[in-house]
Image (tube, rainbow, N blue to C red):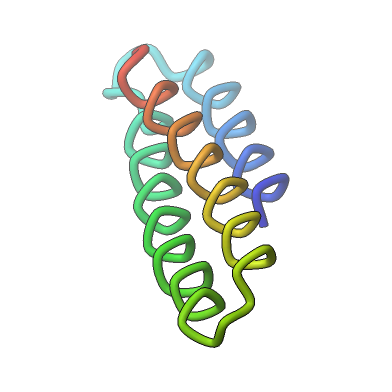
Length: 78
């Protein structure tokens, strides 16, 4: 999921480079990916922690949370 969202962000950024007339769409895509990953981290990681799978839940929270922070940084960069 993270790789697919990053690929989509890269392709949108590449397409934005050839369309200087309109506003860039890549930051909006990065914001969308950030929210998707943040909600996924809370739901899946929190659900696993609630089911007493603490290690798997912590890893899920960490990986998806860091990916959400990555996309938040990409959205703020442009």
